[in-house]
Image (cartoon, rainbow, N blue to C red; front, side, top):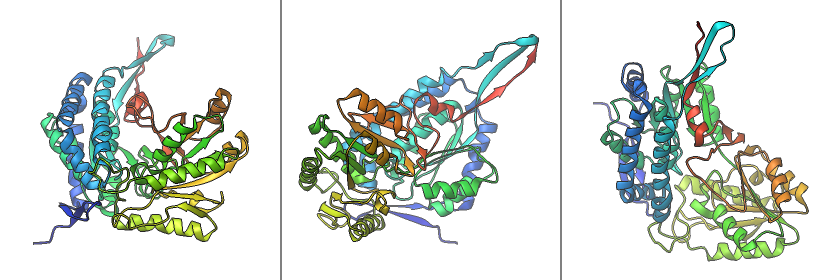
Length: 463
């Protein structure tokens, strides 16, 4: 008998083996797509009323809330993320998202255009079909909800490729989906590596639409593999967030949010505030305060309530972070603190504050995806906007000022999908999220989120 390919799943905090899961091969993925295709073409799901589909989503949300601690435990073990944060935000946000789209589905009504020349023109909103969903490893449970909830509410069926680095919570989700009474084939979850399972999924002729969260490089590969069919693709990709602090801001709040934005989730966050722009009038004091904050930051076990920063996801990612930092230092950047690995555990990376970084340096433009912040002084609003826009990415930015004119001009001028004014990282199911430029296309969450999974059919009917 041929050996079954497997994925070895380990705890980033301890290196301890957690599970061994099947690594889906091309034939496995095609079977999953076939099941989703049959469920869409022949099954009841697309033909159920929005209220009936919503009832399944509400039951799923209830089971997630019931099992919140267990799901958080799996997610924290798998990713190295802080257990308290996962339990309080990731799992809860996912449940809220399923509930939000359960309600929104009932409001996505058909329209009718004016009827000139005795012709009625009703517009029908119909599910796009079978969706390929590829989920990122840094927020797997919440990321899956942002895609699954609107897709299912719209009446689509789905094949999910779980992240190879962190698939456990989605396997647990599958059990809750079955318990919630979704018909067979509506949701299919496969594990496997991107080059095999992911490629098989996006190139399968049974797929009608693709939703992907991950790196820009992988998005390019997905586009190439699926180009022969030209499916709609929604992507949420990398970021290089600019965080601008003006002298009139509430500096204590700005400092706390900057530290969380740069170092939270161990920096493994597409919207991380990785580029800090500080007005020259407050530059020295703000850099000094941030450096002291970084040096006090408690690194350790993700299950210890005292821990503020857990480990990176794996050794390869840790080395990639350090390589970018060391290259920046070679190019003339100065480490105010950090730029070191191995303390207190083998996958921890010290919060790193870099100054004297050229806006042309590689680290100023490439996503580090680690607890590293590069600081740039600016003289005035025009220079802050220019630095913020000097990026191929356009996911998010933030600005700290009490001047409404400054905030409005910054908001109007930066080319990003989301701007936070005197706050950071504000997410709710009803608020759209997505980027421009190399940060992706399309939107998740909010009313527009369900629109990505619906197509408009125009009917012209003579009276």
